[in-house]
Length: 546
Image (tube, rainbow, N blue to C red):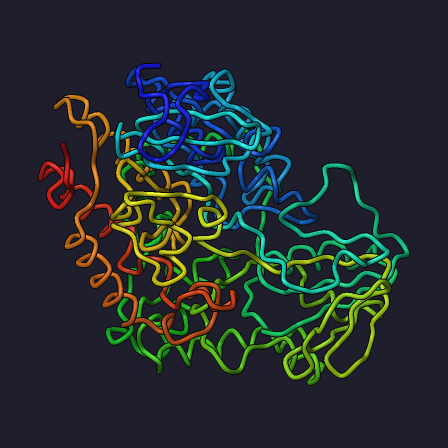
């Protein structure tokens, strides 16, 4: 090695085992594409992933019922028509096994596996100020010296588990985001499931018919939309593949990166026409009502109240039982201010004699015991199996679980424990040559068809590195002033929405002590892309480069 034996940060450089141009953390949707792009421009690059295979979210989340709620034909890479048309989906919203197969198809078509290190966790990354490069440490004891570090860890990838006593449970206990590969049988078993967000809903509706007795612990009821999931034959596949050019032009510029977008202004329509639009969106059996009916539902309390009551009415028609309605239909927040799940007979699961609801709003879970779950009032519910659908430390958790150290040994974990800040969700002041995807203050943190937003971020990062190499520049970092400006713009945009007034993981309020900030940029996917493009066109104004 050419470095001094011991560098300025105290690392013994003689232990460096590999020298690279770039390290990509993660081999999911973003990581695969980032690896491909950086490799195409001639960099020596390696992707590192804790899993044994590719897929990211779609590798880990193999719980019963896991599936898309973006239409399959838009949840795809759009940089290659050949890659796009070489895969055919079996239905509109495919399940996890098919999604995982698709990502393996991508890895094989692009010959990516040779540059992916599986079964490995990045535990530490330190910016070496003497060499202006990153030193990345893995759990295998390897120390990698790299110019660029790109995180593609996913925004929902750090499982949130928070009940004392879990290790004492004598039955089987699973978190949905770390589901075993081998089949799990629920037949005849007493099953408890904690959580009824998008993941919990998919599990509940899938296992209700199999479990001997299912108890669902519910704190916050959810607005839900019934999914319509037609099968795709050869003609259907040909039809959506024929739209490839349209999709490449359309998706990057809509509000949420979906094919559909807001087309109506509430004030321009009569009450009858508004109702007609709402009904049409509902009947689509997709997320259309949420992200393509009326943009005003995000900003105007009166509009939101009317649409919320429409959804409540649809849910009441199916549940009928007043007690179930009280427990499963939201009353204290508006439609669309939380993540909106699609479902398939979720509500009907609670009409089954073997399914029971336990409300934890006024009697929370205190701990897990050897036999089951103990409530605050001392009641113990006994189970053979417990399923934790308790969500994630969204946006930040995947990175704060790595010891990332920037200039002056500053800690990203400590910085984000005080204030969650980024520059456009692409870099963080104080961490030179660290590029990020799917972190806070960009649409990819929540409000986006993920492939649309992740592709855009990957391409911006790739173009930025290409620009630096063309100018023989070694280091890039956003200035403090640039980051302050973006945070202020983000907050102004977010705080104008009803999302900012509603407790949910969108604000990090599911994690005790997490700084409160809307995680996702709310200005729209198209507007965000335009701002990113303007930065690139200006020669990365606001970013210090040398």
